[in-house]
Length: 228
Image (cartoon, rainbow, N blue to C red):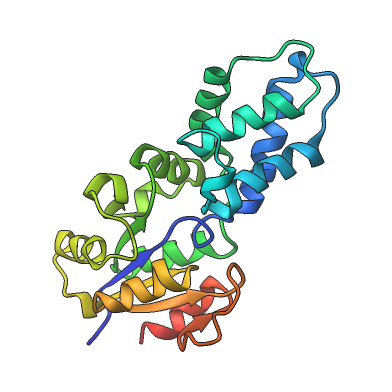
């Protein structure tokens, strides 16, 4: 059945999470330079990477319910402050600024421009808080490309459960088999999408042991090979 809609995961699909962490860390150190005795970029990036874990935080590394507060607490404890801000300030800083530090995946904007021009329906399906998803897309400058933006918070169910994929297809008024979904995670993205009846591609490079996935791509430009 002909593809009518192309749906995307967000982190490590449309945005490169680790590159975004580096940009965020640089901005953080600049904005809080008056509070710090020196800038420690490598240390700051390492702390954020450890807790964020590519957007898939491990529970034992979180000191608070959110990545934002856990990162804030770790930075307060580890950096050389001459006047440490309070945790709430650093937590809010993450929510306000991490999305605005988002770095686009190579080829993402060219692909979205082409798909929009060719009148494909476009949507994002991403686990996480809805406001955070919107902020990242705003930071990327991608918001206007999408017909819908679906988060697990918005619909009350997370990937890989089929309901989040089926809800998106229903909102776009397409059948699941008319949708092509692209993501980086073998379970949340590929297995979740195909289990809901969508066609799917896995973007290589972000998770180990994906050799069993039959439909894999190395870059977003290769999505075009699966549309015809």
